[in-house]
Amino acid sequence: MEVVGTCTSTSGGMVELLYMQFYAPTTLAMPRDFYTLRYTTVLDDCNVVVCERSLPLSHGDPVLPPPDQFVRAKMHSSGYLIRPYGGVGSIVYLVDHMDLQPETVPEVLRPLYESSPVLAQRVTMGAMRYLRTVAHDVDGDSSPVRGLQPAVIRTLTQRMARGFNEAINCLSDDGWSSMPSDGMDDVTIAVNTYPVSRISQGQFLFCDRLPAASDGVLCAKTSMLLQNVPPALLIRFLREHRSEWADLEVCTDIAASLGHAPLASRRGVSCYGSAPLLLSHSPEQRELLELLQMDSPTVFQDGGFYAKDNFLLQLCTGLDEASVGASAQLVFAPVSVSVSEDMPLVSSGFRVVPLDSSLANEHEMARTLDLASVLESGGRIISPSADKGPTCPMRSILTIAFQFPCEIQTFECVATLARKYVRTVVASILRVAMALASNLSPPADLKQTPGTPELLILVQRMLQSYESHFGIELLKGHSESIDTLFKLLWHHPDAILCCIVKASPELIFANQSGLDMLETSSNELQTLDWQKMLDENERKSFCTELDEVLQRGFAYLPRGVRISATGRVATFERGVAWKVHSEMPECLAYMFVKWSF
Image (cartoon, rainbow, N blue to C red; front, side, top):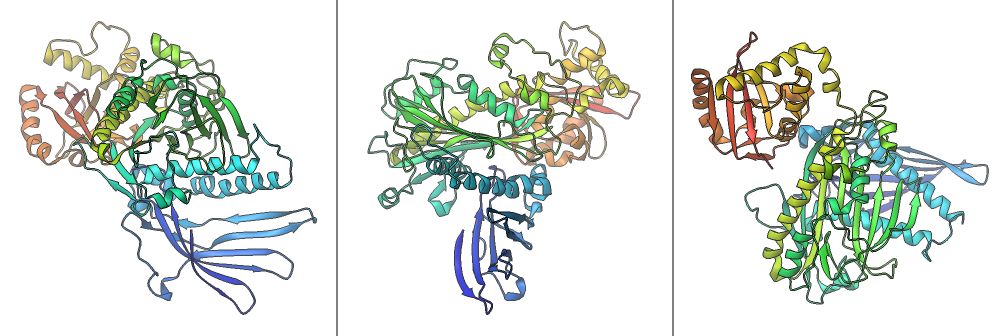
C-alpha cells in the first residue's frame, strides 16, 4: 500500500489517496490493485471511524492506469468503526465490500472472486485474527519462545508468507522476468537479479549460506485442480511426509550442475535430523512456525541450499480449518541455526485453496492417516464414519512455487532441472492426492451411484462395446458386479469420457481421471463446449475421426491434446474412440492414454 497524497478536512479528519496491490492466491489469475480514498476521523463520542472506497469515476481518470500485470478492482464503501469498551479495550466493527472483477478469471476460479464467505474468510476474519494476536502480545501475556519475542515470530511469519506470495506472483515491479516455455506450458519459470542496494536495505531474501557468486534467483511454479481432497489434510500430509514428494535424486542433479557436492540419497529417505522444533503455535491465527534440522551433507532441496547442520524454517497455516473458503499452506525456507528477525529468507511451498463452499467433514479432518505405509503397500484405510457428516470440498486449486538461488549465467541450466523437479513433485502429489481421496468418503456423485441405474447401464454398455470392437476387455480379468466395475472404471488411470453424438458432442460421463484432465466436476461436465476442448489441428481432424468411428465402430487416435476448463493444455500419448451400443441417443466413448499437463 502506498499513500499517494493526503489532506485535512475542515472538521479535522484526514483524507488520503491510497494505491494498493493485492496478491493473487494462485498462478491462474492476475493480482488486483485499487485506487481508494480513505477518510479517518474521531467522533465526539470518541469513536474512531475509518471509511474507504474506490475513487469515484466522477472525479476523473485514476492517477495511474493499472499495470500490465494487474486487474483494477473496485472497493465499495468499506472500513472500520472502533468503539471504546469499558475503559479497558475496544470493540471493532469491520466491513469489506469489494468487486474483484470475477469475469476476468477462469470460470473454475470465480467462486474465489465473487463469494462473500470467501472474502470474509480471506480478508475480514484474517484482519480480525491479526488484531487479536497483536492485542494479546501488547497485553504482555505472551512470553518469549526459544528466546524469540512474539513480535519477532510475527515478523518472521509475515515475511515467510509474503515471500511465498511474491514467488507465486513474480511481479515485474519486483524485478521478475519470465523465461520462455519449453513447450509444455505446465511449469512457469521466472528469474530475478537483485542489486546490492536491495540486499543492504534488507529487502532481499537470499540464503546467507549461498556462495557469494549466487546473484540471482529462479522461481518455478504451477497450479493444478484437485478433486475430493481436503486442503488441510493434504498440507498436513505434505508436512509430515516430506520424503514422499521431495525427490532428492533431482536435487542432486541440480546441486551437481551448480558445482556442489552430490548427495548420496534418494526419494523416500528421510532428510530430518531430529523432530521439528516448535517455535510458535497460534490457534488464533491458525498457524504454526517450526524449525527443522536437515540431516544431510551439502544439498540443494526444497528451493534452497543446505550445508551440513543447516535448518529449515517452516510455516504451516490452515491445518485445522473447516471454514468456508479456508485455504491451507506449507511454506519453508533454508536458514541457519541462529534465527533472527532480519535473517535472509527464500520462501517456497504449497497452497491449497478450496473452490467449493461445502464444509469439511470434522471427523475426517481430525483423523491422522498413516498414508506413507498406505502408498507403499497400495492398501486402503476404511473410514469408520464414511457416511456421516458433510463431505470435503469437491474441488480445490493446488499452487506450487519453488525458488532456486543461483548464478545468473546458470539460469538456463537450472530452469531445465527446476522444471524436472517441479514435475516430479507434481507427480508425487497427484499420487498422494489420489490415495487421500480414495481413503475419504466418496464424492456425492459416487454416493448417488446405487440410485442411478441409467449411469450403471451406460458404463456397462461402454465396457461391453469396447470388448466387442477391440476383442479385449477394458478392465482385464474383472468379472465383478456392475457396481464394482463402475468403481474400477472411475479410478482407471486413463481419462475415459462418453458423449452424445450431436453437431457439437455433449459430454455425459467422465471418470475421475477424465474430470482431472478437463479440470471440471461431474456437475459441470455437461456445460463444457466440445469445440473449446480442441485446438486448431484437432478441430480439423475431428470430423474425419467421427466419420470413422460411426462407420467402422471404433478408431485409434494419434498423440494429441485436449484443452481443460481452465485453458490448460493436456497432452495424451494416444487415444481410442468407440461407438457405444445403447438404446439411448447415439453415444461415443473416448479413452486418452497417459495424459499429462
